Image (cartoon, rainbow, N blue to C red; front, side, top):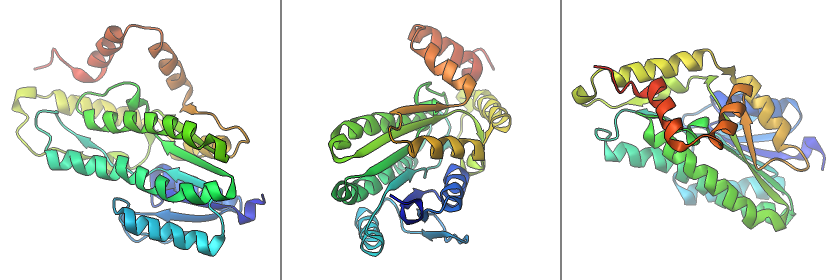
Length: 270
């Protein structure tokens, strides 16, 4: 296959990891299509603001791309948003919305591209997960939950589609400098019972993100690995996070939760 003819579809193309990854593929000569929440224009990137939770609309758009290009080679699932607050006080509709966009949006687009990848006998699918899928983050429980679900979704999918020349990689980045925090939705209910713990936890997260990797660095790792002949099943991004993920396999879960409590739970705070 020639790079100039290969087709890439990226969700969340207008910002963060999605945009940074799209720019790399574009600069390497790939044909790049993408999904964005709002109308988005940048030279060399073809985007739509279709709702990724609408499977029928997504499926029809993917079909149009395939009929035009005769191939779909790469899918990078990067779309998503965060919510913060206690489990007790997070609105159920907001929880459902996060899963609809972040989890089922990924499922919709992935389902739509598989038949075309299978027909061509080649495909690479990337799912942008998070270290939060491995380490449950208090006051962002639903973000951790859907990312963990995506990890298992990706691994199960990899087994199913492997005979068709399709491979799936879960990318697990640690803290990075993106606009994710600006788009995070904070619950607007009375969290009096939790005192200042939520505020302290979010402050800690923001500080970690500001000290984190650049989105361009993460995008380079995604591109380098997803384009390999034998891409990895999982790829943790960030040296310190590789060590943490490794240690998670060794230490008892109770100890891991104790550390997370000290970092983000602030159980003894008032």
